[in-house]
Length: 384
Image (spheres, rainbow, N blue to C red):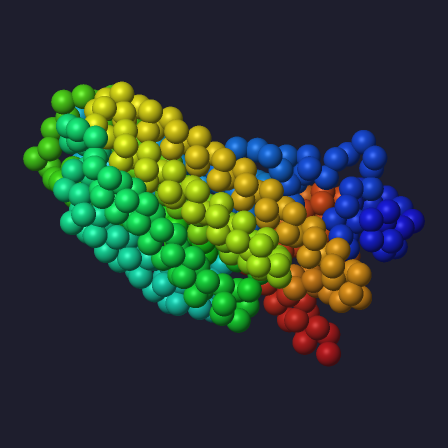
């Protein structure tokens, strides 16, 4: 039996081609099985499986539960007027979960201090610097207090346009610095480190811009409004920044055409620019402005997540197909004796995809594959 897409020979019982990932069942669409998590469609609003591609299907619930607890804690604290508590819970939720994911799945492999240094410390520091610059350009950027009148043209240009451009440049620079290192030059690593950089920059900027709101002396006058502010800054904004950090890198690695690469940069710029202008122009409208800002920010975050999922899925499939046509192996393939971290089926040697569930080997849990390789090496040494 041969794959209709790449013409590779596949086992008769296979549901997906293990070389290019194509669905071998005419009734089973490949877009119904996301390459990083085959239990979900490609176009699904799933934060965890999008920004943490190495999670296996049975581990997703732990991270979802942690984020859900933080979300509820943010809402409850804001509803009871504890503004600093609400902002703190929201601000650290996503960066902390991403950091634990990196640790738990050994995403950083043998370079943890490099990833922590650039992806967390430098990124958060850059965010603080951008926030301080924004404050110096516009003393009324604090969403909690709001503006009393529309900003002038110079403020719109500096705070609404220049600051987002600087943010995108920082996101792209730091993500590129991490993914340019040996062993990290893969589309999946762009997701891993772009998400970490984006959330860290968002955290640093929010703490600088909203520094007064973190004071224990602040008491809420409108709990529902403050809960929305906290959820926007803690969940929507970091997701937007993470997607903006990821999209240029994915397009840059997949395409050689300057025009196609520019599309990724423009996608990231649209996300941060739309959010920056939105927060600035709606701030004079106080509660109504905050509600609109929150709604549109979450829409932008959802659009960014969907675009990232489609871009990663297409990148994994196109990379594998290109490798088959070039008679080469993709950068990430299964080693003999490896099993799929999603369905537990034995992987074909040098497979780029699981032939049963269609998940990409490049997105499988790293520590499980490494443990299997170590176990096989030990068994071979004992046998010899």
